[in-house]
Length: 98
Image 1: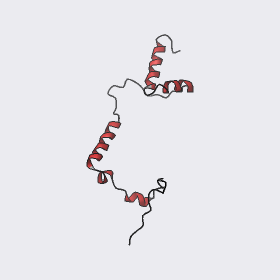
Image 2 (image 1 turned 90 degrees about the vertical axis):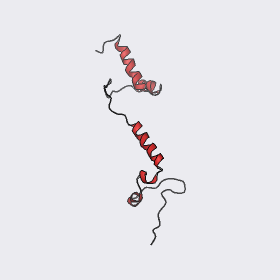
Image 3 (image 1 turned 60 degrees about the vertical axis):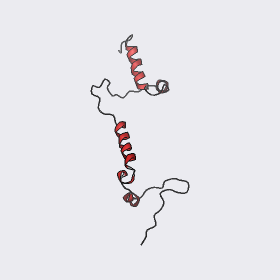
Image 4 (image 1 turned 135 degrees about the horizontal axis):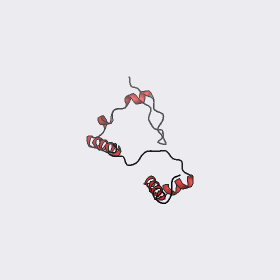
């Protein structure tokens, strides 16, 4: 008795909703990938995780900023949060926070 498996994608390439039967047939990546490729994926995952800072120099916070301020800093690209921090430090040199 052979069971007819329904393709995971339709004619346009869209993936259909997976069923529990589909998931049971999945195998761990280590079993189906070339060993070198799998090791490379593990290395990428290890590099992507950031460990705890040995001596945290900044504190996490939530702050509300006006949309134009956010847009201006985000438009400068990566590191925009550091630039906001630097702008506030510069402001504190000549102003009091109260």
